[in-house]
Length: 488
Image (cartoon, rainbow, N blue to C red; front, side):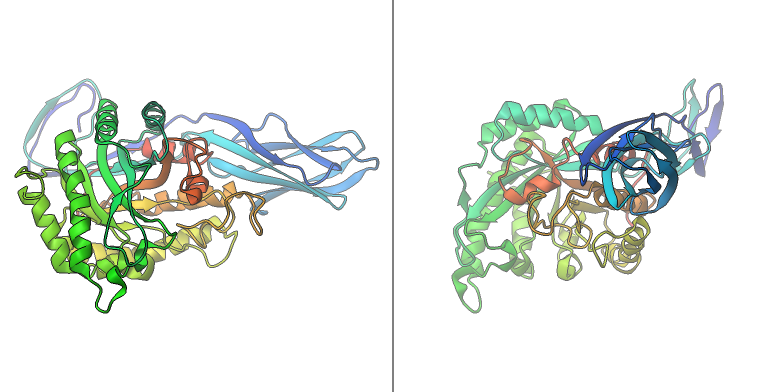
């Protein structure tokens, strides 16, 4: 690092610490109103985020005075009381606003309840500091008039899974461009082939499988946006079953030789396209639980990609990985990580024991997963780790059952929108792993190439294009994550 007006020679190993203090700014908008009654109506009167808090005005639309109106944030994390409000009048009080993101404000009085989602966005306050450490192991002479950070190791992959099913090429390009407003630097392009059922051994294209020309054009567009590009082919089962449970031929043992023969053709086709388009990373599969113990087949597949026997003698020169599930510790059971460039996991860890947890509960459960599962595993495999998928829906209970959504609309039984829980889940994930340099990427699921598409139907609740939690991601992706290196 060099500072303005300083010329210096740095030798051997130097620990550099930079402390960032940013000016505080604030603005707000209301995201959604849920009217539970006409007796109490919440309006926002000049609300701000820290340091002044959320000033909340409550209007009494009833015909009699309401006393003791309790106003609270995020399930009574912070609250204030308005002593009384006469009919047709408003009263107000100030709640501590907490961190940035979506806050659920509720007002209770006269036996009535009203709720409103409020969105706060702000930078780090002047009293808050973020410390980032980097190490230089070289001799360097520097003279500069600006502040720079010397980086070794790999840059953190600030990414999204980009699911462009049913999007035409221009729609996909437009939404990929929009994705860069989040400070993202990586995109995993998700597309699908299928097999008919659990016992099938024939893997084939689908009506929505993009053409090679489409994919090539999309990769080129991503490159023009300075994004690191991942090709991420997915396998889908057409009868609605899960690829976790495939049993080729339905026999004991399954006919893995036949299945891998078809799967190899599928993967080799896109390994060649990844090389031809200059894609940086290629995913050879993911979440195919029953196939993962077939180590010999996987090593043979990987070797074919690396030596070019897959692709007319042209080796793939980018990096390879595979995305196993966290459920059942599938990522820890995989025995062929040494053949890949990154270790990875689809990180849908259960981070609450009940619906509507507090932020501290979510953070504690993530910390437990970090210390007792992920970190020991990363130390064992000695590779950088990518969360090839991670994400939460905007419905209740998303931290209790991440990676799935039984709720497709707020009208489904037992379902309601809960942006506060989603926000807390994202925040807890970022806070837990920001200072873990062996984690080299988050690929959030999902950014949509065609927002509001219902194919596949369970994708919609994860979509982030117009979701308030986008701002939380934008903030964290705007930070300097420092160098990323494997655990020793």
